[in-house]
Image (cartoon, rainbow over the protein chains, first blue to last red):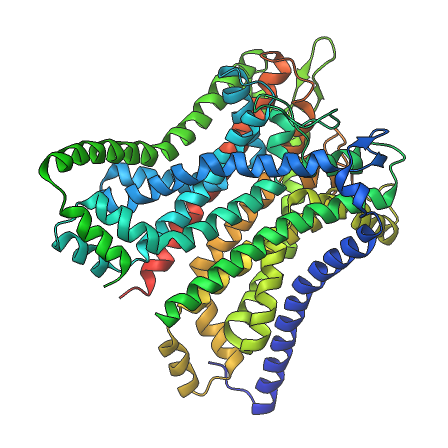
Amino acid sequence: MRVGSISKRQFSQRTAFSLLIIATIIVVIPVLVIVLQIIINGASAISWDFLTQAPSQAGKAGGILPAIIGTFYLMLGTIIFALPLGVMAGIYLTEYAKENWLTKSINLAIVNLAGVPSIVYGLFGLGVFVLLFHFGMSLLSASLTLACQALAMTVTTSREAILAVPREYREGSLAVGATRWQTIRHLVLPQAMPSIITGAVLAMSRAAGETAPILVVGAAFLLPGLPQSPFDQFMALPYHLYTVAAHVPGMPKNTIWGVALVLLIVVLSFNVLATIIRLRDRQRRFNA
Amino acid sequence: MSEQETRAISAVGLNKGLQRRWRLGEKLIESWIFLAGMLTIVVLLGIIALLFKEGLPAFWYTPPWEFFFGTSWYPVSEPPTFGIMPFFVATLWVTVVATAISVPVGVACAAYLAEIAPVKVRETVKPIIEILAGFPSIVMGFIGLILLSPLVQSALNLNTGLCGLSAGIMLSLMSLPIIISVSEDALRAVPDDFRHAAYALGSTKWETIWHVSIPGALSGITAAIMLGVGRAIGETMTVLMVAGGALAVPISPTEPMMPMTAAIASGIGNAVRGGLQYQALFAIGLILFVITLAVNLIADKVLERQKRKFAR
C-alpha cells in the first residue's frame, strides 16, 4: 500500500468515486432518454383506430392490429414448445441426471445455445423448419425457431427453480412411499412453479422483441388478414417496426414512433408481470 | 401438513392393480423427461450440422483463403465473387467501439453498485438496467437510426451518421446490462473478510476496492467482458439498421459498413435456396457461430474458476 498524505489519498478516493458515479449516470441517462422519447413521440400516434385497424397504403395509414395479434400468436407459439420441454429438461437435470459426461454435455450445450447469435437461429429455422420439414414461411416455423432460441432460458430457469426446492420435501415424500415421479409431480413442481412461470414470462417478452430470426423464417410486412392456421404467414410488431423505419420512404414519423411505443409496451409489460410474480412469490415464502 | 403433502401420501395408498398401471405411465413420463434433457444437445448439434451442410460447399466454389481474405462481395455479378473481409473488418470495428465504451463504463457502474451505492440508489438503478436489458434490438436499431446517427453526423461532420461508430455506441448500450450484472456478482462474491483486513491495515475505501475487491473479482469481470463482446458480435438488427451497409473494407469506424450478421440478414431474403450466395451466407453463419462459441466457452471456463476461488 502506498503511503501518502491523508488528504491526497482522500482526494484520490473522491475523484475515483465521482468517476464511478458518472459511469452509473452514463448508464442510466440513455435508458431514460429512450423511454421518454418513445413515449412522447409515440403517444400522438396511438388512437383506437391505430390499435384496431389493419394497415393501408403500405402502412402509412390505418392501424397495426394484425402485427399486434401476430406478435401474441408468436409469443404463445414459442412458449407452447419451449416451456414444457424446458421444464422437463430442468426436471431431468435436477432429479434424474447423474454426474457423468452426458450431463456435462447437456450443461455445456445450454451455455452455448444461450450465446448463439439470433441470426444463426434464423438460418437454423430456415434450413430445418421451413425447408427440411416443409412448414414453409409460416407462424409455425417462426414459433419453433424462437422456441429453440428460448430453450436455453426456460431450461436454466426451470433448473434453478427446482434446485431451490428444499431437499427435505423430497426426502419426506419418498420416506412415506411416494415414487420419484409422484414426488416431483405433487411436491417439487408446485413449489417451483412461480419461479418457472417468471422465467417463462421473461422468455415470452424476449420472443416478442426478436426480429432477426423471424425476418429469415416468415414474417410478412403487409397481409390482408390475420393468419388462419399455423401454416400461414403473419405480421409481427418488431418486423413491422423494422420495415416502416428502414424501408418505406415517406413514412410519417409519428407512426413509426407509435409502432415502437406499442412494441415497447408489450415487451416491458411482460417484464413487469414477471417482476410482480417474483415479488408475490417472495412475499408468500416470507409469510410461510 | 400441507394440501400437497396429503395428496402425495394419498396417492400412495391406491390398490395394487392401479399402482402397476401407474408405474408404467411413470416409466413413460420419465423417458420423455430424459428425451427433453437430450433436446438441448440435439438442437446444438442440429445447428452445427446444418451450418456445415449448407455452408461448407461455399468453400468448394471459393477456396477458404479467398473467402476469408477476399475484399469483394458481388454475389449476383457474373461470375459471382465471395470475399468476406469487408464484413469481418466491420464486425471488428463495431465490436471494438462497443467494447471500448461498455467495458470501462460497465465495470465502473458495477463497482459503484456492488461496493459504494446506498441501498436506495441500488434499488432504483437496478430496475433501470433491467429495462435496458429488456429493450428489443429492433428498438435500439430504430433509436440509433433516428436519434443517434444525426447527432454523430453533425458532431463529427460526416457525410452520413449511419456508420460503424453509431452502431458501436448502440451496441455498447446493449452489452452493458450483462457486463454490469456479471461483474457485480463477481465483486459481491469476494468475501468481506478481505475488505475488513484491508481497512484494518489503514486502507481507504477506494484503495480497498482497487487493490482488493477488483483483483479478487478479476476472472468474473473478464468473463463479463467476454459475454459482452459475444453479445456485440452476434447482434443483428441494430447493426443492420445503423452501421450503414456499405460493401467496401472500412478503414475507419466513421465509415458506413456491413458487419457479418447484417450481411446474412440483408442477403438471405434474395438468395436462391441451395445457390452459391445461399451457401456463402451459411458459411458466414458458420464462422459467426464458431467465434461466439469460442467466446462463450472461454467465458464459461473463466466463470467456473471464479466460482471455485472463494468456495469453501
